[in-house]
Image 1 (tube, one colour):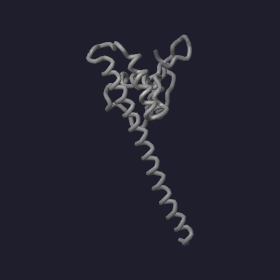
Image 2 (cartoon, rainbow, N blue to C red):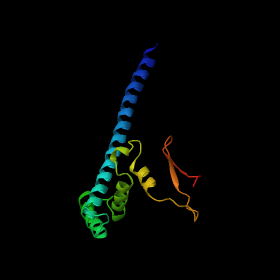
Image 3 (cartoon, rainbow, N blue to C red):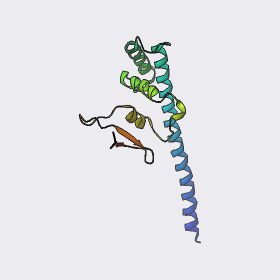
Image 4 (cartoon, rainbow, N blue to C red):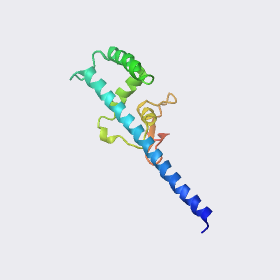
Length: 138
């Protein structure tokens, strides 16, 4: 084997190591943020309900925490996003059911009700491809 081919293989091996590390880091950071959003949703639900079945002051709480988080952390903590985090927690109350293959964007799509027509055709998650597809059975 020539020295040029050995050097190319050597470089490709190092490149693959770095790419794998970056991919793993990206997935881990995404999942850590998904867990953070789940925990935020849990905190909101618990604070709103304060041991009751229904919340009394959710709108005020969400607006107030949105202003504070936006001031401290910047974009991403609008009232809409915080409501989505609350809905996310309510949909997946067991954190062990969260999948590290899915990003926050995936979970948002799963949690949001999808209706494309008056027929109300819901979306389902194809676990093999992690893609949302229209449900053909109702």
